[in-house]
Amino acid sequence: MNRAALLLLADGRFPAGGHAHSGGAEAAVHAGRITDAASLEAFCRGRLHTAGLVAAALAAAAALGLDPRELDSAAEARTPSPALRAVARRTGRQLLRAARATWPCPELDALAEAFPRGAHQPVVLGVVAGAAGLEPLDAAYCAAYESVGGPATATVRLLSLDPFDATGVLARLAPETDRIASSALRAAREALAEGPDALPAASAPLLEIAAEAHAARSGRLFAS
View 1 (cartoon, rainbow, N blue to C red):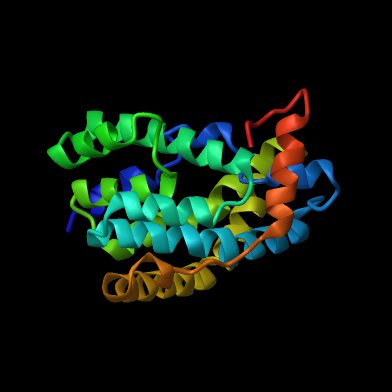
View 2: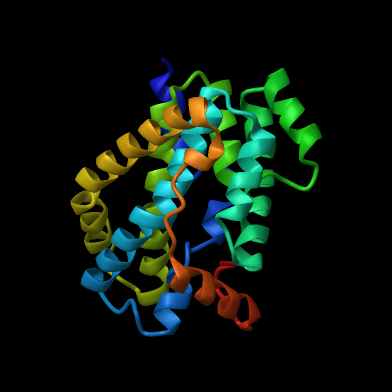
């Protein structure tokens, strides 16, 4: 088990393009739904239990060896917003590019060949985790943490929020992140026997609607 690889993959400085995305936080700030640490925490909690759970289960399933094509179709079905679908494929393509340079292997080459325009990011994350010598639970943790870490970091820039307060939000959400990662792994194992339909499909309609509005706005700080 390569724990150092887990730290590298989860590091926000890993060149996977995540710094350009706020995970919906910019749209929420613009709409007045995030104004301080308390509202950021509520936003991140909702995101963790919906988009975070779905992403974590997809990543764990990919790390377990489920067919990336089937998982990509499952991810597409769970992402109603065209804007978020485009973001997921763009970030997936960037993650795969970085991973092929970091952990070169035939599995990553095959994924790039199968998805020249990019697969959904959680699916790529799971395959990358396997290539890096990580466990499916590690992949679930990476995805779950990304679902809240991105918005928290972005809000520091968007609102000039005290970084200590943003970090406190992530610390308070840590026990829930543990539970989400474990639930995602259980669902991924069920999908091994039952197929991708067994994966969670938790819905966050406001995130989807806000993503479409955000994509149409000018003067954005973040791409999503």
